[in-house]
Image 1: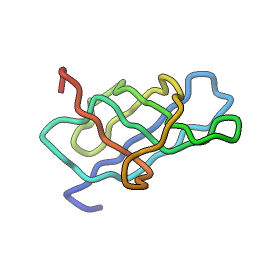
Image 2 (image 1 turned 135 degrees about the horizontal axis):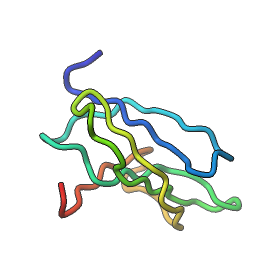
Image 3 (image 1 turned 45 degrees about the vertical axis):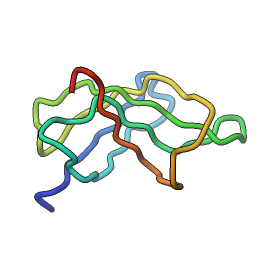
Image 4 (image 1 turned 90 degrees about the vertical axis):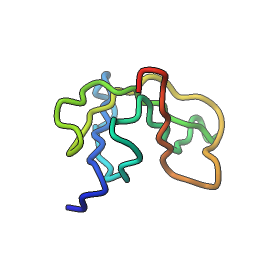
Length: 88
């Protein structure tokens, strides 16, 4: 395991899609409030938004709960974007 990364566990509440995890770089002393991941929705480019649900194992891991899918793409062709929120 790399000291400069954390395991982000992404959870879907409806259980129709399986949870998955990603290893992401640590960008600060606290976990990001939101993660945005590249996705598709009905064949169009979309972004899945996940909100921080549990940071009890930070900085080793943090769990994120699916919030919504929105039309769009991530900047610079990224697959995941870490977004700080006012609570971060």
